[in-house]
Image (cartoon, rainbow, N blue to C red; front, side):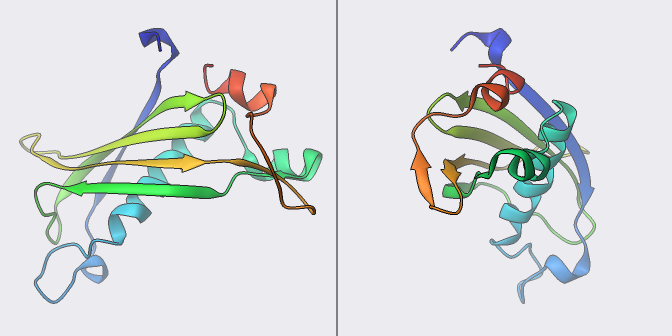
Length: 139
C-alpha cells in the first residue's frame, strides 16, 4: 500500500467516570467505543455515510473482527487522542487505531477493526468493497 492511500483522522476525548472499572482504569471494552467514535469521524471526514449508503444500496458493513493491544492504562479525566487510519478497503475495510495521552504522547493502545460488505436482506457477504466506498476511502 502506498502512503498517499492512507486516510487518517484524529479525535480528542476525555475519559469519563462511567468508563472506569473497579481498579479506576478504563474498562477494556470501552477502547472499542473510542475506536468507533474515531472511525465514525474518519468516515464523515471522507464523505462516507454508511447509513445513507445502506438506504440507497442495501449494503451493510458489519464489524467482523476486532483486536486491541493494551499498553498503558487510561485513567479518569485523562485526555487522549484516538487516531483512525484506513489500511485496506478492497476486499474488506481495515482501520488501524492508536490511542495516546495528550499531555506526553504516551502510547496507551493500538488496535484494528475489519468490516465486510454484506447485501441485505439476503445477508450475503460480498467479497469486494463497492467502488463508491472503496474510492472514498482512498483505494
